[in-house]
Length: 584
Ligand SMILES: Nc1ncnc2c1ncn2[C@@H]1O[C@H](COP(=O)(O)OP(=O)(O)OP(=O)(O)O)[C@@H](O)[C@H]1O
Ligand SMILES: [Mg+2]
Image 1: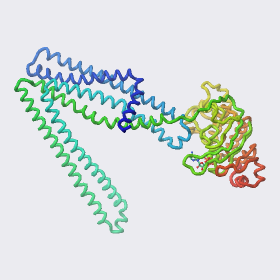
Image 2: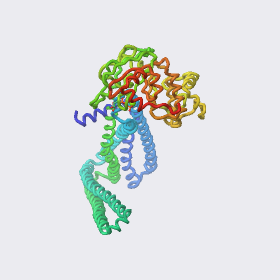
Image 3: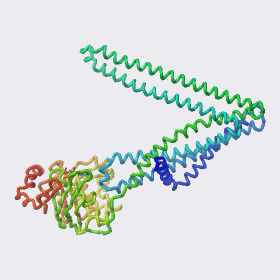
Image 4: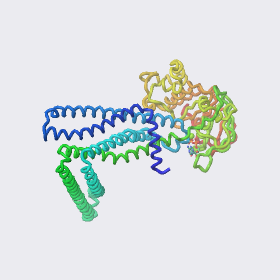
């Protein structure tokens, strides 16, 4: 497809989305026709206005005409209102739909997609690109239809008044337009040069003045002065050039316009002499020409508006056309036993040479705790991301209850998993709503309270103004790290999923906070199959098994005591890395 053809295809798709609002569009279209028609009618009225009011006063017309004018503008006002309302309603609705669809799409995209585009860029697509699309749909259409029809109507009026004079006008007017466009371009170019020069001038002066001591000590006044002089001289030359260009341009355009008018007058006079034109017709002709100018200007500029809108729409449609997260599994799962197995799992991120995980195999029996340890970048987060299928294994398979995770329906699989991460995601809403996140509306407040209690969170919630119903500020800005963790634990308690994924905070919580969090976790962990990225000694000590990762490989596996006795990487990490809460 050529670029134009694809631009039309995109525009067509955009209009397809507007079809649902055909009633508003139809009303707007009728309004536009009335607007154009009233522009034509007004210019036609010029003839009786001149002839019957002034040239040969007619008693009836003298009273009727003012009323007609008022009536005409009332109609025009209603038409304009209808057009603007209809177009705004339809255009804004298209944008609203796009925003909803794009956000919904973003939430269905695979996690890997979020590595490619930063979130602020996504938000700007939602806000800014959709806004540009409105302009292309509503403003541009309004201009295209109203102004094109207006031009046609006015041309019709002119031809009706006098074909000959109209033809002469149509020859003379483009000449003037071309000349003024050329002059205008040159003027803008020089003007830009001056603006750059002014910035330069200011910079040189500022430098010299703020370094005045150096300038004086090095005796550099003369050279600084020279630099500034050169810039000021150039500025003088350019400024004069701008002013003279403008003066020359405007006199040239005016002279041309005068010549044009003279030619028109000559032809019109000829017509009048032969009785084919009167004063009223001439005024009506001139008015039509003048009234056409703003419409012409808007129509010639509408191109860029459409281009911007089409480019933005192209980006948005590009997002809407991206494939969703694969969800082809058919096995349904109500409540998993919580048995996890990794069978020869390897992961390679796109564009990376070394695999992030290489041939990982282990099983986690229902209700056990598996601690994952290893240096930064060893693949711990990658491993746990495979379970809810945020990322897919490149080789091998991950099984839950003996079935590969990609055989399950995605929503069913994810319902089995609760995550308490380092970054706790909170919404600017009440504590209760945050704990009940993802639960069906109308969750029993007593259950929410019980979850908060078990998570050791009521201790601080009850001290907050508003308690359970108190708001927590944007992203929980009013809460401490330990408090946020406990809210996340309460959320996981309420979800009560068979599989629990923990990513322990590396940043030190204070001793008291640490104890409350640990205590809450100890209440959450039993009955759940837990995978935990461990940073605390007590976690690894109590784990049923510890997996030691190094550069994506599973290098050691066993209990804390076994691994310590072996004296390998684990015992080394143990000495370097694990900390107890002080005086814990
Ligand atoms: N989204 C990604 N795209 C590309 N490479 C990634 C991505 N996430 C992680 N990696 C790479 O994969 C390797 C393992 O990263 P991973 O985040 O799993 O390590 P980690 O053990 O969790 O480290 P840390 O303790 O610092 O959190 C690293 O080399 C990392 O650079
Ligand atoms: Mg990590």
